[in-house]
Length: 453
Figure 1 (cartoon, rainbow, N blue to C red):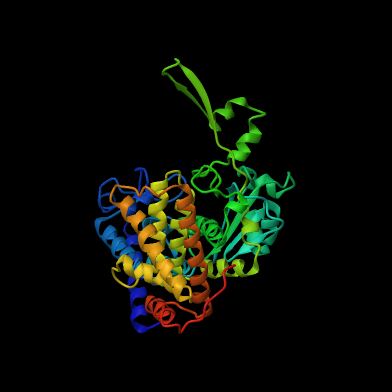
Figure 2: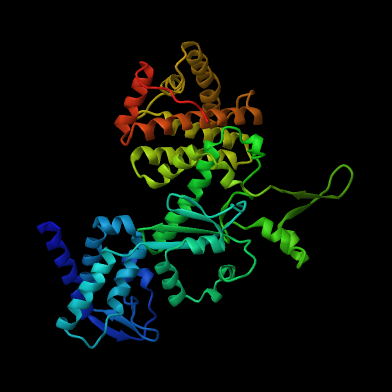
């Protein structure tokens, strides 16, 4: 720790100490999360939780001290990387509010120092949540920080220290899926995520990485139609965090026990018209998402792990391109899919700063070595993909744009994505400048080609 950062930590601790010394018991209702709002923490209604039955309020000077310390903490790299900024205010509020009230300055200081140290150097977090619409893997599937599989197998894969901590401090009986860890039918799919980020930020990162894994699995598959993963069918069967993304397969099984649940699986439409009133039933059905099968090839699994475990401007760019491709896949409208795929192309092919469509077309062409094929690819990108994307962006649509066009466009996005990931991983490309250099070398035949999966 440098002298400057050490002095900064001392000032933060001193500010927290002054905030703790300015507390008074109160009957006001505490709202710790509200301390992220300046108008609340400076209002007469602002109170902090002290224990299960009491709250505390701060003097004006103590509020200022807490405010200054929290703002200083929010500039610390550890806080920026590990916490949600709004939630962090409530964490600091809890750190101060729950301190004993009968201690003087000498008694409070070591407690504050210990809590501050834990705040800045927390243990890794583990996030557990069930997922919907994933086909049951044959075992515990581990990709980067994610473990996905039958609940028991995922639980068994956790370190004993994590299992013990959960068992001692949590009642699994209070969690609806907790029974799946203790002997009930092993048909529930659980995801475990290990991260340095904390609390709400940890869950956000877990959900994002899970969604990115699904997007990458789609992006790495050359022929989605062969696996009956047809695009333009909407996202009701898109894998997600179960409870946020309703598991329609589970609902389908539950219909046998409660027929009213069937209302959530099919739409009954009443229409009047030329033949009078009529009803129709609209129902969507899909197989579970074959995540393990999509990641069965070792090279694909390694690349997915690489993208989920590495954070550079280039790997973030590649993950973003996969998200836009997924948006196109799970959409129902051709226009939405074309626009999303156009953005995916932009993310993969743009140079630093604003680049015209001509540059994107050239880069699309440079990814193959054959001069004749490059000419055809340049014309296809400029005359078809870029034209369609521009038409949709400006409120129109090309007459040649249909579902087959969208799927062909998506296949080309996936093909160049695979090639670019291979270059990025094998050449250890990390910066946008190095990414631009790659295309310069491709242009002049100085970079090797890769073979599609």
